[in-house]
Length: 628
Image (cartoon, rainbow, N blue to C red):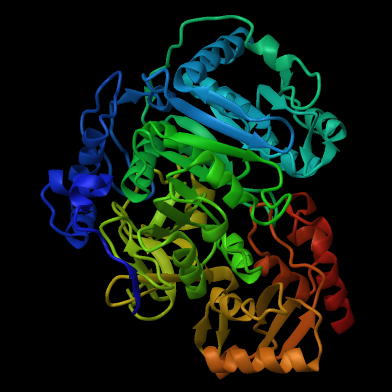
């Protein structure tokens, strides 16, 4: 175990989690984490008090019913997430925006409040009220944030999809929740090319019959619907809603069938995000968060929640790797974030390209680097510390859309161990189970949560009896949440998430995580991307690579996997493909590819509109046909 960073001597006075631990009398993270799951009511009340959260009607207690599913949190409370987002320091910067489409935009908290008040008044004029759905086909721009907060302030329900999505994928998501208002852009600029989305907007509008009003937001064109929406002033008010009142709907990737419409509540997101962003990423007043994301990924919801901590956000739209791969680092030097979130794929691409951002740019403002999206190989840890220096805190976490937060993560009270996540996060009773529901340590198991979290979904949309909700998370272990990831916890409590459990490989009774393959294979300079599946009926391990593949490279791939992992990791078949199919949020389509190789039609296992490159699936269909 190699420790790359250790908590500094002044951690209890200089960091949010240090001050939190000190206030409540805990001398170690281990003791703090143990309390956070042994006394759920005490811990979550402490989070509420530490961050001075407000309710227009106070809660009667922290927990009513605590069974899963169906936990009752903070019964009696009436509050509003949006009220906590709009700080009272009117002159402090709230939003810094950069895009390929237009010049820089900057808003103070006062300016943001003013726009939200106007947008709220505009939505109210259109008849939007508590429980109505407002949806957006918008990029990561300030107008999207304003519309979201205006919607939340009314007690209405928000959902967004990024304009990279095709019309069918948008309709598959948004039609489920029967929206009343649709906000759209007619196009945007990607790199230096104008992308026209008018045809998609027409199709989307036709596919959402419940929409009564379409608002065109001008973004590089002369659409004026946004100005009309914000044309009147009104006092900014916040509808008091129950703790579990729906705030927004997030959607699963939708690579197979209709995406799940996952409903998150005002109170759960409020509590979970101040804990995760404040105690985990050390965001606080005067801080700034930069994290490239689209509005279709839960990281957008996490990004904007930085405002809860009186930190500002950097909103990026366009190609984050244009004009070159160093652009995100260049923007960091320009916008001066204290916290910069990055994906493992971006880190490893920078490393492979030989970029030296620590030498080429002034990145001295960055104190914390959260990592999410997929496992980060050990070499990625080395690279980030080489570039950003020994004082930077790397927080590698894993969670997802389902809880809109982290399940395992790290913070300033924990050391950073090379290649591993720090462990169970505060308030999360996470562990690994074998198929029989026994806790396992030192081996791969299902990542499970044994006690409720406030940000577990309120439910799925249009699932009144909760049948689909229970099937999604509680089908394998009664009253225990199964996340769907493989995880290995060490005796010390650190962990490695090894990929989705529905894509995990099982050879000779030994479970192998796909993330372990990718960490090794994609270190080879000739391999640009990869995907591995196991066909159990043939006991065949098939590896696809984006590379100029020849017999020599095949032999080196096999030898590398054998020496660095085990003989069980050596593929039976290695094939070259032009591209690896990924969702728009960057996840590899392991399970859908596996189903294609088993003979299922591609159109039934993967929605093309949900793919970053809709043509990437074609090579796998051809591969399956050739073998049939």
